[in-house]
Image (cartoon, rainbow, N blue to C red):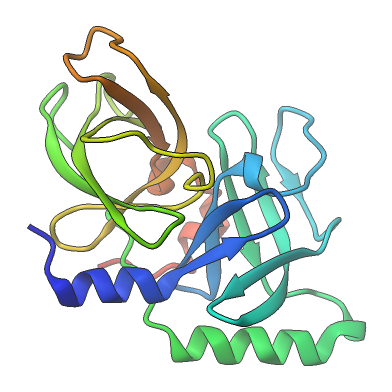
Length: 208
């Protein structure tokens, strides 16, 4: 079971994306991971690189400007980071100060047994927690199938899914209500960062 201290670490690392109403989570390398559908980007069906847009995030009462560095619409995951523009040096410094003050989440890189459920915890957009289980149905699947104990409400997208050790195992992608043959009333999915992020990002995120 995830400890109170771990919950506090996850809560501090979770940010809001007010633009489209989603969440994001800070990981190593000063990167924020979120769902692709929570950010503005050109949806071409392939990886989109470069800071074509400025994305705004909020942590508590403070707001920061960041840039989408990589967006993968198919796996529904995106990477946000500091603005690469000389016009926004102050914003870059503010964001870096925020990252230095927050403990990033550890990225879980485990391969889970096929079809065997394991316990997960979802940080909601209202600041609460939703427990449940997750499964992998295909070998090296880039998505986790979630079976939460309650409905994942709109606004929780892009938020962290962690295991009992407080490690990040997924980013909330979508959810639905109603049986899909998995035995639970609620279902959803989460992209697995270590299988969906571009290699250059993974190389800059410290391994546990």
